[in-house]
Amino acid sequence: MPPAIEISGLTKTYAASNRQPPKEALKSVDLTIPRGAIFGLLGPNGAGKSTLINILAGLVNKTAGTVKIWGFDQDVNPRQSRASIGVMPQELNLDPFFTPRGSLEVQAGLYGVPKGERRTDEILDLIGLSDKADAYARSLSGGMRRRLLLGKALVHSPQILVLDEPTAGVDIELRNMLWRNVRRLNEEGMTIILTTHYLEEAEQMCDEIAIIHQGEVRARDTTANLLGSLDKKTMVILPKEPGNVTPPEGATLDTRPDGQMEFTYRTSQTSADAILDAVRASGISIRDVKTREADLEDVFLELTR
Ligand SMILES: Nc1ncnc2c1ncn2[C@@H]1O[C@H](COP(=O)(O)OP(=O)(O)OP(=O)(O)O)[C@@H](O)[C@H]1O
Image (tube, rainbow, N blue to C red; front, side, top):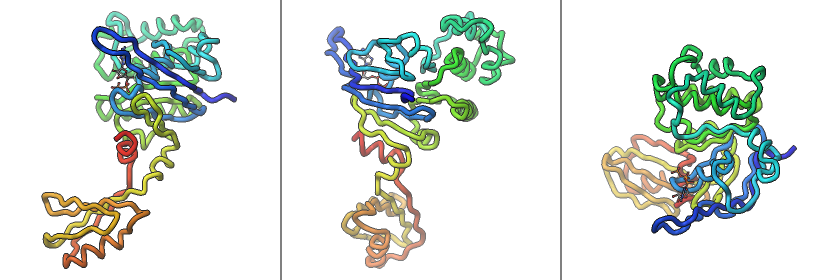
């Protein structure tokens, strides 16, 4: 079975425009996303994530390379590749005069879903808008509009669902609802691709992650492997009284204004023992010790610095 997404040599150069030189937003990207994954696409602003997603969605034309969606080459089988993917965009652009039911019906029509096969009521229920089904979109709250965008991405029952920054600026309740929906869809077999600025969220939600920077894929691995790739640790010591410590080889010390000493070290170069010894050797008694493992933010910073 082919993977959900297979991208090779994908390049996008935006043409020069008034006083702006041409911009190479994607530089020969190779990326494979397996079926059934919750896959995170991470990267700083301007990395090329939206360009990549918009190419998948058929909204931006690529400059070079091949894109296969559910095994269908975009250039060879445009209809099938389009039918395999649904995209929930970032912008809340909805026609204010359509009701949620109307929007879903129109969208289904655009994708050629026959009337008898439409799942409008089921989708309204999933996104929690059954009681607003016949209200004008302009009367919906921002959160409701976002849910409607998710619904619109689902009308043609795509195998792959792409979510572009689905939780940017949404409240906790909506975020939880979105993630519950995403998990449920994934459990039912849908492959999920999402971009997010919240690394903690990516850490919790995604099985696999690609980190994009300056139009290139800098890392692509399981979330667990990415987290394990850094042997960086942090030890915070609260001393009984202030004092000066020379950190052991392989560790750096940052003393906070409140006197807490934050040691950052690599387990391959030094040990927790060596740090504690260095502190005691300076005649300082220790009131409390906390440690912290590397998280996705550390991995991200290391790769995009
Ligand atoms: N239509 C366009 N014309 C010219 N340059 C563009 C266009 N769209 C994007 N770019 C440029 O391409 C690069 C990648 O942009 P892109 O929007 O894909 O990044 P991103 O990773 O999605 O960032 P963000 O998280 O801010 O949305 C940026 O330098 C951006 O300025």
